Structures are given as C-alpha cells and as structure tokens.
Image 1: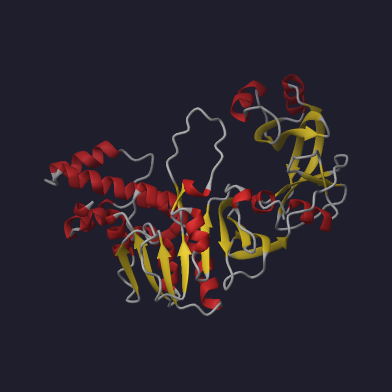
Image 2: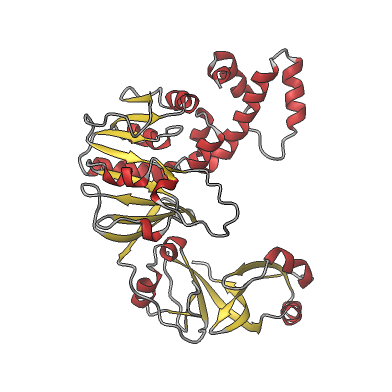
Length: 389
C-alpha cells in the first residue's frame, strides 16, 4: 500500500485514468510494464484506478482525487449522505467531532468540508494512510491510528461511529441471528458512550437491536436503501422512526412510530411501489393510512387505490391486465399486446425473473412492466404501465 503513496504512483494513477469493467486491463498492464514500471506498482495502480471508477457512484467527480481500499469503498458513505450527517452535527452546535472507525474518511471529509474539526480514528494503518491522503486538504482534519474503544474522546463535543459487522463463521445456519458482539466496535460499547453521537449501520440491521430513546432513520439515496442511522440525545430530532429519501438533490422526510399496518383490500386501478426506506422502517402502514391506500396482500409491500395518488415516495403504475401467475397465460397476453420490452418485478413469490424472461418469447415494439406478486391469497401476474410524473 505504501507504494501507492509515492509521487511516482500518484502520477501514474492520474495518467491511467478511469478503468471500467470493459477495459482491456491486460493491454494496460503490458504497456505500463514495457515502460519500465515495477510489477507491484502497476498492480496497485490498476487496482486503484478500477476502485476510483467504481467510486464515482458514491463520490461523483471527487472520486478521481481520492484513494480507496476494496473494503473501505464498500463501507464508505455516499458523499451526499455524508453531507447530511455533517449538517446535523453543525446544526446542533457541535464543532469538534471524533469519527470512530473512519475507514477511508468519507464522513470525515464531509465534516471537514463544513468547517468542523474532525479526528478520524482508524485501527488499520494502511487504511488510515489513505484516509490521511484523502483529508490532506483540510487543516482541521487529522487521522489517528488507534482502536476506537481505547481512543480518548474526552476532548470532543460529539462522536460519529461506523461499526463494521464482524466476519461470522456460522455457515450451517440459513439465517444468522445477530447480537451486539457481532459488530466491531461492540454495539453495547457504542450505545454506552456518554457523549452525543450518531451511529451508522446497514439498512437491514435487526430492529430488535435498536435501543430505546433514539431516532432511528432509514436513508435511501437515488432509489437505493443505503443505511440506518441512529441519533442519540443531543443529535436526535425526535425519538422514534423516520424515513429519509434523497433524490435528485431533494430530501423528503416521513416520521412515525412504526406501529400501524395498512388495510388489505381488492386490487385497484393503480399500483404503487413505496420507497424502500418506508418499507424497511415499517412506516409504510402509517404512510398508506394517511394517503388512503391499501395493500394488495398482507405482508406484501405494494399499495393500491382506484384513484391516482402522486407522491415522491411512490412509484406509480396503472393496471393493464390482471393474470394468473401462469407462464403460458403471461406469454399469450404479452404477445397480444406486442410487448417486446419488459421490466419484471416480483415480491412475495418464488420466481426468478431472469429465468422467466426467455420463456416469454418477447416480440414487438411495445413496452410494459410485469409485477409478479400475491393479490389476496392468490399468486398473480400484473401487466402495468409506469406513470411518469
């Protein structure tokens, strides 16, 4: 990793530029080796160039100025989401933040960019070296190589924690039941820290491990469910659950208790796919009841109505045809409508869309969506048309 932080490596990395999945990597390696560059250096530069290309989905054009590890990129917060974290600290008057388990420094970057003092604490020395490179432009940001659980936080206003899931070797179990000790740092230790704090977790984090008295917020960004953040006293807007949707530069917030269920009723003329932050936070029921929407089947996250409801929280479809979930019936109906371009979605049924698609023998100029799901207790195939807002 140290090879990457040399002037030669950084210059070569800039020369190589982006390398996507379709690039002829072998020819690039051959060219660099013929130019006299050492094999280890070439390998690290090529790996980093590919990571930078992948990182554009999280960091946009800033990715070309940052350095990554594979694990660090996977766990790194998206730039716009990290900015939201930093705003919450600043709006609550906190100016000196300890980022415990900082990884490559994505959240620390956002803190520093808002003018906050931040110390990124990372126990892996190689990752910390990259975080130091990424934060070098900010005089009020520094990196410390240390274990988060032994780092002295007494001089800080507030904490940001990003515990990682440990590698679990429970290969015989189909469903792993997680405990606080399955995270590093241990979640019980994270929860017990006395300072105002925010904790970033995966969006599928078990609901029964969320402590009482916090704001639990599920965040989606551009349609992807990206995190659950827990906000403790001093940083929480309210105690309870919230869904935050970030899309096209706008933010939408829905708050509730997560105790209501939507009524189940007959399929209406319109079908809706709620944002995943509403679904995972279990706030879909409260949202549906407020909007006079019902579900198509108990436990299925599709909503329906006879009157069109337009909301940024919903992807809306108009029902074209309601069919039994039968391959022959679906193929015949699609052929009759000349559907050659088909989006296939499914919920609550054991069907693989990739395996079904070739069996439908699609042909024609028309386009539609096919939703495979339960309506009531029956398995149905719904041909629908997306409604553009």
